[in-house]
Length: 277
Image (cartoon, rainbow, N blue to C red; front, side, top):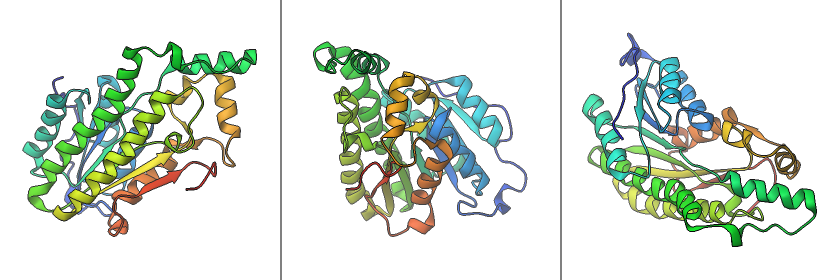
């Protein structure tokens, strides 16, 4: 899909004199039009980024977040490698570099959640696998896992010439403590963890750090589509209940910051005390 730039100030006056952990940095956030990605974009801007590029499949969401942070909006489908490369190339053409890339784009499966709810209400066993068709499987894997591959590849290619950069991907605690009836989501996020860690070992030789945050339930628009009874059960599975998008942004920005300069290939659990590994 083609890129779209938001209206607003591409280089706010005095931006080079900003202070904070990301002072003078150029950042790109995929999935930045809502939820965790939007919270990350806001925090990066608040902590000194000279430019924040917000990429999302939802043009309106991307524009609204970009306008709020004085940044730039792009429309992108992360399942399309050409579109991902085009967004990264657009940022490079404008700034000559990408210092931070945060990849939050991802999906769940409302139909599977409905089947989980039915089992919860009826007392019957969860029956998702036998009804999971190839299209539903491919949708989740293509966005969550293939999309992460496309973004990681483009980001490392962009950062490698300068020998520096930080990338943070978003996995899920569901890949460790799998939710019954969610095989495709768990598999996709386990793949994100393994992919990110493998890339981390390779990319650090070129000065690029790659890390992952693995959230438990987070209060985002995607979580808002979870049936209320399922949502309540998930909230009760941990000591702290649902996290906020801002709490996850704190975790992500730590991993992207100079304060995590010795952290490479980590999968940071942010799951409200549900389990440890």
